[in-house]
Length: 263
Image (tube, rainbow, N blue to C red; front, side, top):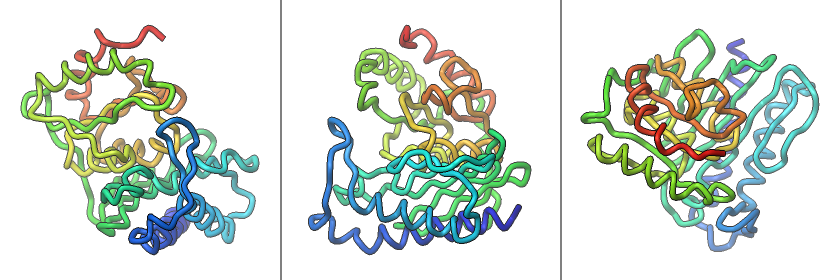
């Protein structure tokens, strides 16, 4: 099973190299809008192609669920890929973006890699084997309540803008009870930071599975918990996620619950 993780690491680093080669030439890139304020660049597509090609060299029969190219193939082994999580940041020269790769086997997350090409930080996790940052074990914080907590989030966008009013209620509830909230613009990195103890917790609405899959495994293998806004295990389907140490997660859910959208 370690071979699978090694291939994911190789693919993530190759994608990171593609991103870094273009980071100082963003003005020359072709950028298209997938929807209002939701962009994709040719770097996203090149990085995704690099990941898929690298994995297919070793596992040609595996399937893929990738942000830009969608679902490819049928297999009990599915690679869930976000080649550039934080495209808007990348296009503006804001250095918070990442490569996210996870392997799901028979519906269960087995391996996860998140790579920050700017800092060259590599977050990895395998089910039952813990989480690591550059080969060193990482753990979530031991924060038990919101007092003194630093929480990450992401603002609603795309179709989820219709929940902005509810989200503002959530934001205020969390902000009034914590030391601060951070919105960096890469959900994958936010989840990696929860796993590494840099953030105490994280919540967001309307994510894709490629945004969450690798980070979810990292948080869980680092001793944390991940649920949707109702405390259930359906976040990959709903796109709504809360991640934190167990007791803190309970506190976050309690603050969010009064503001949950009805749909």
